[in-house]
Image (cartoon, rainbow, N blue to C red; front, side, top):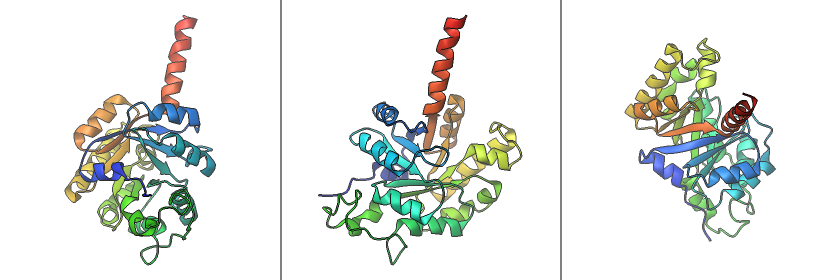
Length: 254
């Protein structure tokens, strides 16, 4: 028995565009439905949702066999949270609010076993098929993908140093928090924010490091892809559901 191949990690390393979707509803049925829609990846969020570890396990289970690779976002860059999601079988993590290379190194070390990290060892977990993957410890690091989220001007100033940390597989720009930090709360379309977003991907391309971003507005998503972003979440389940519900009721209220 073997562990799954992380196709998302390999795709972004080769520069292949990966179109994703953000999932915040916490609904297992919604995740399963979205998993069969044809997206390359699906972000399962625990930072801004009430979703907890058992919910994430159920969501990952319904994605088995789907086209969408699950990416889990822990609530924080926390060694214990990261360990639990990895033991639960998550292979790709998006670590929020990484500000510098030291915090990036902390994320990487949390995802690696000694001597290269501090991940606690469980000989029987969902990740190693409850002990049936006998060479799990030898192969696991090749299949784990560490993405770090840069969400402030200070973090962007440290982009090159963060990207240079061994074990960082991709840089993700958080447009909402970035716009707030730059003084334009709720306005990621402000020219200053857009300039920062474009500068970030230009710098990542020079470094050969894949860059990702959330872009629920279609025009933004297409622009970011043209600029060179490799993995882009082109929508969010909460927004899609709200928009469809509002449009439907408005037609009946006319």
